[in-house]
Image (cartoon, rainbow, N blue to C red; front, side, top):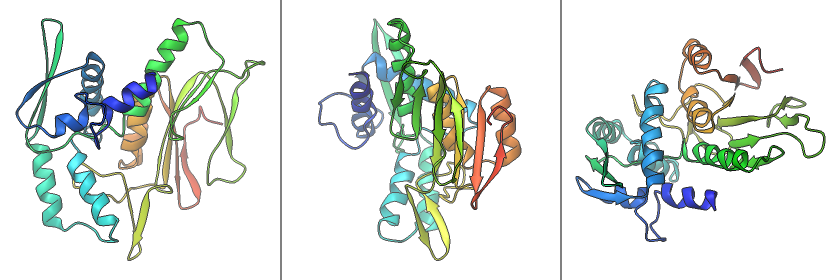
Length: 267
C-alpha cells in the first residue's frame, strides 16, 4: 500500500487514479491546486535535496528529460537550440508549496515539468523503513526496483546480505541495515556515433552524457542515496568525495570495466 500510494502520487505520465499527482501538477501553470500531505512532504524533500546535491538533482528536469527520451527513441539527439529552450524553462520555473487550514497546496509557476524519478523510490523506502521500525521488524530485504534497495538483516542469522555488483564479475559487498542507491547506463542508454547517451540529464548544460558507467551509494537515508547516486553520475570525483563525507554515505564508482573509486568503508 505504501509503494502504490507513492507510485500514484509521483506518476508524471498519467492521472488514472484521479488524484492530484505530479502529472496533474504538470498539466497546470500558475494554478494553485490542493494535494495530499504525502505529496507535499515529498516535494518539500525534493527541494531540500536539490540543494544538498549542489543542484545536480533538479525536480524540474521533466520536460528536458522527456525531450531526450523522445529523440533517443528515434536514434537522434536534441539540437542545441531545443536543449537551451528547455534549460530556459527550468531556470524560469518555480515550485511554490503552501499550507492553509490543515490543507496542502502547490503552484508550479513556469513551463518546466516536474520529474521525481531520481527520488521517489528512495523516498518511498524511507516510509517503508518507518513502518517496519514502528512494527519492530528488522529482518527484511525490500527491492524498490533494483536501483533502490532497503536492507535489514537476514531472516534467521541476522547476518549481512551478500550484495552482488552487476557487470563486475565475482564482486560483492556484505551489507545490512542500510539503503542502497544505484545509477548506471546499462539499463537505459544508447550509442549514437560512438557516444553513450543515458537517461540521466545534466540540469546545468542539458547533456545526457554521464561521467561514469555506474555509481553505487550506501547510506542511512533512502531519498538521499537515491538522489546522490544519480547526481554523482554527473560530478567530478573530488566533488563526490566531498559530498559523501559531508552526508555520511559510502560510494563506489565504475567506469570502463574497472572500479575507479571505492570508499574505504566498502570492502
